[in-house]
Length: 211
Image (cartoon, rainbow, N blue to C red; front, side):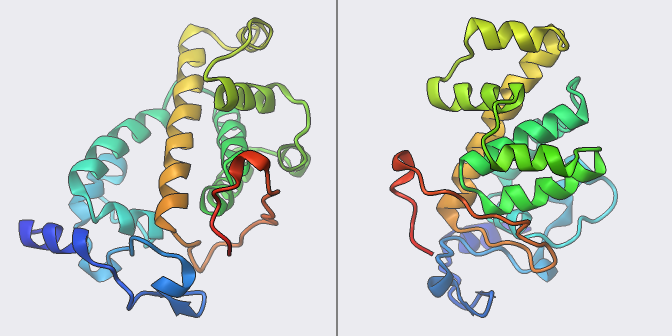
């Protein structure tokens, strides 16, 4: 991707982009994805070298800011290959997505979670705010920026020190990603179902844009 393309892309409003039958402005899209045919696939080599990744709106948005993409995706690659068991990681990420009202992250990670062995009952426990250990861990970190002694001790029964570190950083990183997805209006990819997403309106989430 040339420097001129990077500069021009960062400033585009992209109202020509259409998703779910409308223009970017109509759908609340603030940063439009770079069209797949214009991608610099080398940008994603840190997570999928040497193959090309399939089209995805979140990756198209990352194309707008190559330096940020390389830095974040390098960190994200660690989180996706960390010491944390995959099922634990996906349960935590789905709880973050549900709690933070990120349709995009929710739908993507329900699919990933199922492949990792997450059950429909466990997915429903996330959606219904069940008092599970991982739900509690995500909620405490999101609310208080820390874990209670009781929750930390319960997690430490099955997770060692590095796994606990990876869990906290995973929850933090995906919370940050939901902020970006929600703020920039990243739309669900057409090939992915929203997976029964019906984010409950919460008092602390009053800034959520309508629609």
